[in-house]
Length: 136
Image (cartoon, rainbow, N blue to C red; front, side):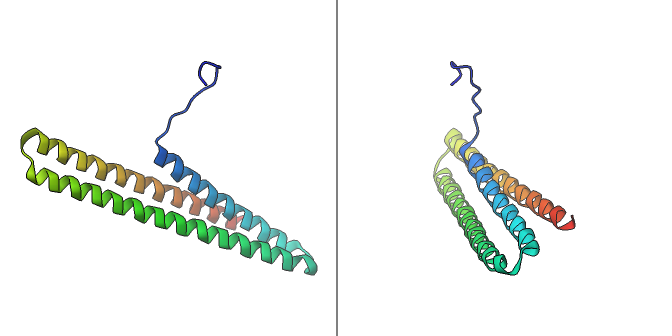
């Protein structure tokens, strides 16, 4: 890509996945709001179709949110298992090996906490945007 004159952006896979999920949820919420606005302006014959579309979008949104919650729980469980395994190995180790294992456990815990903060920040931003849309 670079040889062809393009620009390559590198990111951590988890950050890309989190951003993609957040973007999907935001798009669904925006589409629901647009449908609700159209529903309010629509004539009686179109209202039923629009309501069905809104219901479908709400179902998709709930599915996405549930998938995100499950993935978050899976990540938490995996992180706890990794940290617990490293701590068990560190308890049996000595010297530099023990320090390296403890450092790795702390690093994994820190990465998890940073990712969790980033996801909460994205969720808070989406809520602020939704509140601003409602106020308009």
